[in-house]
Length: 301
Ligand SMILES: Nc1ncnc2c1ncn2[C@@H]1O[C@H](COP(=O)(O)OP(=O)(O)O)[C@@H](O)[C@H]1O
Ligand SMILES: [Mg+2]
Image 1 (cartoon, helix red, strand yellow):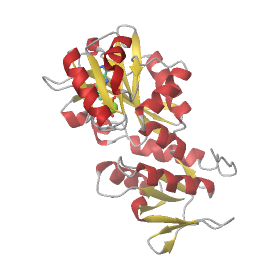
Image 2: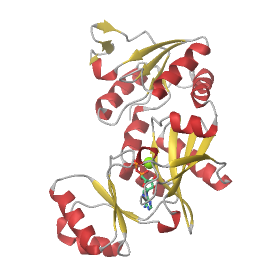
Image 3: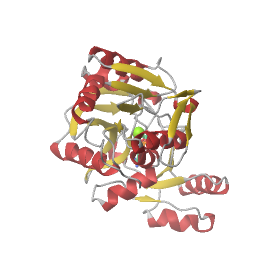
Image 4: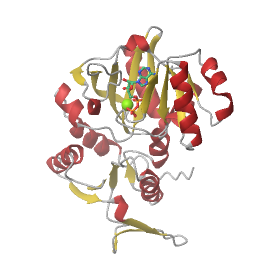
C-alpha cells in the first residue's frame, strides 16, 4: 500500500511511530504536509498538488494527523482525497465535528450519550440567567476549539464566571459553559478507539492544584480497563462522529461516565507509554482491513 501521512512534521512522536509501523508492515509511506497542498478543481478531474507535484493518484490510503490551527484547510484536503476515492482513517466530516466541542456534544446528546450539562450562547445580556440555567456556579468555561487543556477554565464564583463570560462574548470567541464535575477529582479517562474496538485506555490524574487532567498540564497516567459501559460509549461516539481512529475523553461522575470530547488525531506517546500497547500498529492493521471499504462509495455531505 502507498500510505500518505497528512501531517506537518515527521519528527513528532505520533507521526514517527505511525511511519515506523507502516514500514514494518511492508508498506510505503510519504509525508504529506497538508499546509503545502493545493487543490485544482477541474470539472470531473479534481487534482491534488503537493507543492508543484500532482499527487492525486499516488496514494491508496491517507492517515490524517491534522493539527489544531489548520483544521479547515486540512479537512478540505482530506475531503478531496475522499472524493477521489482514497480511504482515510478519519473522514473530513469527522475531523470537523471532533474539532468543535459543541458540535461533538450536540451529536452526543442526539445519540443518547451522557455528557455534562452544557450551554452555549453568544449573548452578553443575560449572563446571570445562563449561569442559572446550568444550576449556578461553579461552572467550567471552555473554548469550543481548545485542546490540551488550554482554554478550559474553572469559574468558582458567580463574580468570576460573569466577568470571564462577558470578556469572551465581547471578544467574539466561541465558548461553552458546562457543569463542573467536582467528584471526578481532576481525573479523566482517555480511550483510544480504532475501528469499532477499544485498543488502549488510561486514567489521567491531574497535577496538584490543578483540575485539568491533560498530560500537557502535568497529569500522571495509568493503564486501565474501562467499564463495559464506558467502552460502549466511546465506540458509539466515534462511530457517530464518523472517525476511524479517535481518542475519547470521559469523566467519571456520580451519575456515571460522561463524555467530554473526542480527538481525531490523538497523541500516541502518552497512551503507548502508559499501556505498553502498540497503538500505531493497530492503526495500520485497521487500514489493512478496511482500505477497500469506502473505495466505491461516494459521499458529498
Ligand atoms: N465539566 C468538567 N468538569 C470537571 N472537569 C472537567 C470538565 N471539563 C473538562 N474538565 C477537565 O479538563 C480537562 C480538559 O478538558 P477537555 O474538555 O478534554 O478539553 P481539551 O480539549 O483541552 O482536552 C479534562 O480532561 C478534565 O480533566
Ligand atoms: Mg481533552
